[in-house]
Image (cartoon, rainbow, N blue to C red):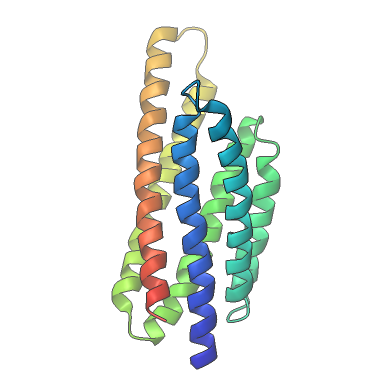
Length: 193
C-alpha cells in the first residue's frame, strides 16, 4: 500500500489545510464587522476562499487516484460552488446543504474503508461521529431555514427577529465546532497513512 498511502496522506493533507483556511475565513468574517478592519478582512476572505478552493481540489485530485468515488466528491464540490453563485435564492441554501453533506458522506465513508485496512478503526469511528453530528446540524439548519421562510405577518416580528438571531448564532457556533471536529478527523486520517 506504499504509493496508495502516500496519495492518501497528501490528499488528506490538502483537505486538512483547506479546512484550516476556512476557519481563518470565519475569523475574518467576524473581523469584517469592525470598521477599520472591514475592507482588509473582506479581501482576506476572498483570497482565502480561492486558496481554500484550490487546496480542496488538489486534495480530491490526489485522492481520486486511489479511489474513483473521490471523483464524485469533486463533482459535488464543483456543483456546490456553482450553486453558491446563486446564494440569493432560499432554495439554494437547501441544495448547498444537501450537496455538502453528500460530499462529506462519500469522503468520510470512502476514507474510513482505507482506515480500516490499515487498522485505524478508532479514526474511522471518529469520522462516523463527525458525519452523524453534521447530519444533525444540517437537519437543524434546514428546519431553521424553513421556519424563517414560513413565518408570516401574524408572527410577532420582534420575537421572530430574536429567535432567528439566536438560531443563527447557535448554528454558527455548532458549525464551527463541527468544522473543528472534521479538521481533527482529517488530521488523524492523514497521519494514519
